[in-house]
Image 1 (cartoon, rainbow, N blue to C red):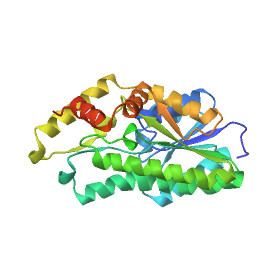
Image 2: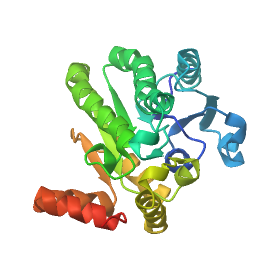
Image 3: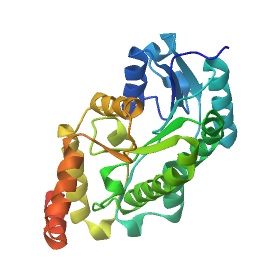
Image 4: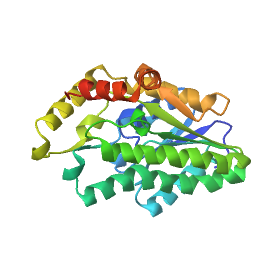
Length: 273
């Protein structure tokens, strides 16, 4: 197809949650959307019915599927303006109980998967001398929380990767930003893998239950989608975009309070003593 004057975004993990809300939000505003996911047949019917949305299979661990999805997107829409790395999941539990295989799988998806997709899109951005790489991280990519040490480690890694990458690609007019939400009301919690650790109970169970309960008052996927859209359409080179009041409050408290006080607050808030 000929190059379209409309802008195009490629989203990973678009079958539900933030990814799905973002796909719908951008499509409603006239963007061409490449909504990718491991199992496209599970995508809501409205995504398949929208003329400006292309639903494609993409597994962030499968380089061939990534390259095929990028090629199909370029063929359909002529170019990409924004990459939104959104696919990922959480693993919770005391570190001692989490197996090396579980750690590897989480890093494969949350870190190496982001690198795989970004690597596939960068040559196109570089040739066009423009592009924007957005990546969902977390407030847990800047400060850690109990039972989430491994998950936090993946988000810290992605934040570091993106921070370093921005300097490398700036010469090609490619921007890099992370989207930093707090808790979000999605099926993310349903997909959360919790690893029990009897030796750490009842502390671990209290913390896990308190964390899940906090999602009842979390931000909506749609509110995060609005932040993603703003980050995609405004100028400037803000490296991190906080999505919602929760991360802003947590960042402020960490800046304001001595470490011992802040750590005690996090411990008590999450069911500790």
